[in-house]
Image 1: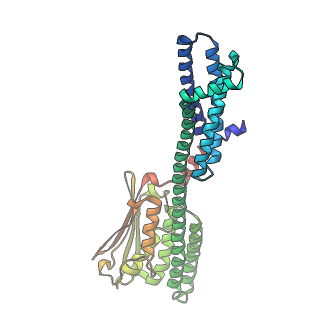
Image 2: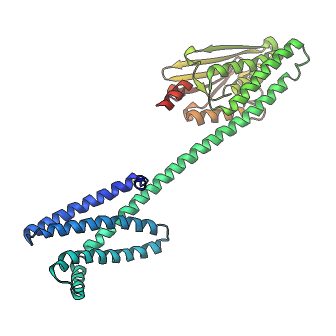
Image 3: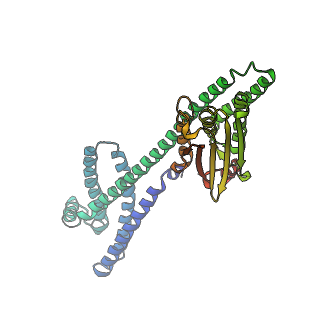
Amino acid sequence: MKFLDRIPKIWKRAYWLICLWYFINFAISAIIEWQLVNPAYYVLWNAFFLYEALCLFIILIFLWSHWLSSFRPVIQIAGHVIGIISFFFLMGTLSYYFNDYMDGLVYFEHWKEYMLELLSWEALRFHDQYIITVGIYYVIRYFQGIQRQEKEKSLLAIKNKEMQISLLKSQINPHFLFNTLNSISTLVNTSKEQARKVITNLSDIFRYALDAHSEEMVKLSDEIVFIENYLKIQQVRFGDRLRFEKDIDITCLNIEIPPMILQPLIENSVKYGIGPKEDGGTISLLVRRSGKVIMFEVRDDGLGSKAKKVMDGSSSGIGMANTDLRLKSYFGPQSGLRVVATENGYSVRFFVEEKMVVTKEEKLEAKSI
């Protein structure tokens, strides 16, 4: 029974459908012969016994075809030629046994004459039975191969996506930590109080960065705390020239987003919008829900299109590009960054469909189903 359980359902269904098809054929031909040619009941029994033998041979043909499939096409063709000949002799001999042998025609000459008659009139029937069974086998194998290729492609695509996301995260994290250390390097000696605050904020940033590196998604509320710690360090450097405002829809606080996805956008505003501007400016973070779509926007009133350097998210030029790729990898091409630069500052937006944002509670519910 365990052996039967390991057989794929498609092969079981194919076998039963073939047997059903030949049952109909044998039943019709036997009934016609019984009614019009020979009214004896043994005609029906002979047809039933031949049908049973055929069902057994179908299994053997499947196994034979499966064994041959591991060889080159030429060997497979030669093997099936041998199979057709063997099948003809076996089924023909059984037909002879149930028809002539049981009637007393028991000698070799009788068998030979019967087989020659089959070869002249009914050989095609036996050949068809073998060829149809083999054909069904190869059709199933063909479609199974296509399904297997599609499955392998899907798994490969998932692995490539995971590798790409991991690579993008590994590029962002060291860069961010380096820039954060560089930002506070000149502030350590300013005052002990500020140094303590910076160290506290920096330790929180380190902890979040390390945790985020192993997490696929984080809560928006945690990401905001991380952004605030980052900006507190920057405010120690820029003082009152750097201001931060947030306008967050409270229904969005528990949604999950890729970790450190907002940080490059904030960093762009600091470095290229507010930092070079003499009187500084304000960075605003907005999160809004509109129907099934959640909008994220980071904007500032800095130099905007008047900035000397194009917004790229980092000194190495990978921040914005990586953020755009990460968003598309997680949520699809429609969630890519939309950047608008005017004389009044920068605005960077991206949109996420609500159905694509899954909370941890929803994940646990899904796993429990």
